[in-house]
Image (cartoon, rainbow, N blue to C red; front, top):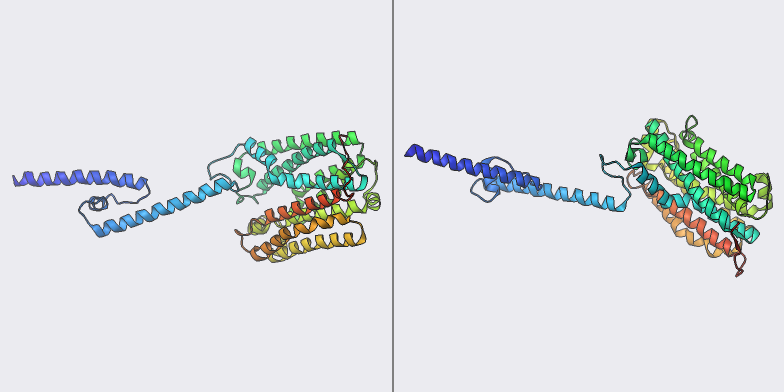
Length: 408
């Protein structure tokens, strides 16, 4: 009888141990790290055992559960913001990435803002707006910018400089070859639209300027040139989007035919256009200047000598502030000399808050790799505000006169 009692007692303990292990497994799936040891498992579910050990195990389990909740919350907020790519292992399709680029506000700010300024300039000089060329060139400009952004990431993937860049479209899709051909298709369609506009407006000079802008876009990042690796990307950006693209859009939006006129002739005949294009080139170059702070280590390791690598983030932050100040200085000088219409004075100063916010931000955070990332978007916001407010002032340069809009 005594042996049977001992056996029955051992059997009971075995049953309790099995149940404890099952409950411990369920609890661990919910985030609590419970031990599968029989005594601790029993104590953790409120049965007799070592309560001190159970309390420690329960505390560790609750801490792990809270940590998991925080991670989940952070992941959810990042996904909702749309600023971060999907988690590792989850790849986006090429079609979704390209579509997002077409709908991105960045594509509008870079592609359409020069066209808007040029259209306002055409009205200030020629007192008319051509709606057809405007809409066609807006679509073509977005197509070319999508090509530029896609190929930048494709070419950077070849050198390895974007290996830690989570937002790179190559890292998000894993389809470098498909992205390359999608970019070329976008460029071909954009050039076809531009050619149609040039033929319709008979502005051959504008066609040459736009072609030069596209070529600059390629030599900026494409092999074998890769001029951005030499630290001259900002200079190329200034000419591509300022004197070239803005002046070309002005010509296509202008009723007068300049034929094969040179930039010097255009500047002599329309100093307003030349200075406005210069201002837009500076604001656009400032966007690129504020895009390198958080990539200094990677760029330097891969031999990409951006201004932040060559000069340091502190100098680049001060240079960005100097560019902002230079834009307002040039604008004030043009206003004082009568080159810029006085109507712009009622609008342009309202861009100062975004300029000051950008300056304060980069001066305070240039050395913080994580905190300085929004600098590029603050630069985009200032660029957009300055350009659109300048355009509003130009459109009001003829007082209350109605704006004549022609289709072609």
